Length: 324
Image (cartoon, rainbow, N blue to C red):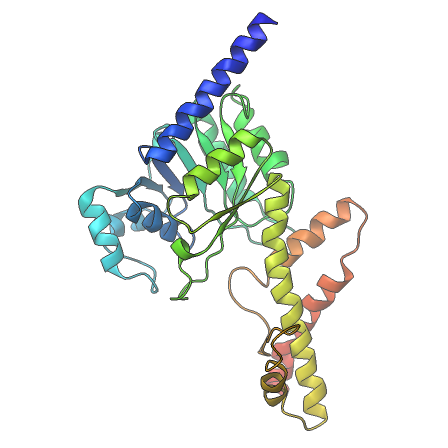
């Protein structure tokens, strides 16, 4: 019993020390994956006063950043150059340096396989890269959109394989990305962040990290709840886009202008949110993310008919555009 109390005390000290560094902005933040999600986080954290170390397997990205140059169209060089010059932001391809940051944010792609199953290969390979360098007192946060259970069931065992124990030696959380590239009204530092973890300590640490560079953090009870919140956001959009795409076909057959109908409907100050028809779906998230929940639901014997129907309608729209 005495040894158990001693270990518990050490665990609390470990969490408190990391929390203090996060609150004081003396923690080094590591961002793995410097694409359309990772780079804006680097900038937002750096501009808030935190030091950031970015990691990417593509050497052209760290090389461009070292020159003070952006490789994303919606991010100007002027956002990069001052951070590089001041030393707030550095980037590398050397994954042996993963032990240096106090917090590691995983921002890697989560595509679908040819059979519309989740492809977690980037998350798994990143976890395998972190595991040999994981040290006591680090916080790891997954940001990649995925199905409920990924953080706890997939990433956690990989990180614990080296002998460190989650919520005792290191801390693990999930906080879904909410990027909308090119949206000047809502950049990373202006969007609230959902934070979920399977222990109060990890959840509080992750919230302390993000509180410096987002307007607010929304804590949820588990990593699975945070994973589900992201899927819900994108499924909401996919289903409503499918609805309005179908209405376009119906009203078009009747000789009614769907755009005029939507403009009239949105004059109602409650109970209606306008969505607009188009040639299906594009982008990184909306065509892909709903299928992550569809796949996971099968494990529980649940059929996601509504979500799958929305996917079928949106996928068929290019055919109607061609015929028109």
